[in-house]
Image (cartoon, rainbow over all chains, first blue to last red; front, side, top):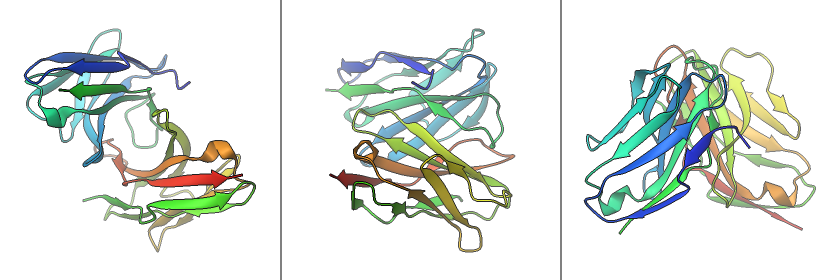
Length: 114
Length: 115
């Protein structure tokens, strides 16, 4: 158990809908990262927050947005969902924001868009 | 741009034998970190080992060691005394230090440990 929690574990929804994925980092970790794992794209970095502020952005679609709250939990919002958004979404956390800190991953949320 | 290459799609190894999983990387930066993660069939990503680009010694964590050859830009994972529970997908990843902290992952490779 990495100490990172993600809810829900599974989510099935229809095209055009909006969903929110939630992540709670390990106690004491200030950085939260979101990744998407799909069969065709592999594991891709979406976005990073550090202590409430957006720190880095990757291949995140405009239909997706995220935020980190004062209690450091984070939410990833996916809207106007398409079939291609079906994937495993991971949240990871690390204690700091530098590249020397290992990232601990949550169990993931499996999103299925039908 | 950073790139991680894992060319072995799958490997089979007998229980209790050692196995090496290959990883090569490409970056023009001098300061970076290399990571290995394990993803069992249950789906979670488990951190295994980390090597910094300026670390002089190869990293080791229990049965895992990282064979870091900076000039060749390779960071192979060595698992000694394989166990059935080592059967999983293995991902090599890199992160630049001082810039964006995103992890760039390779495509992964599947290890199967046979009894």
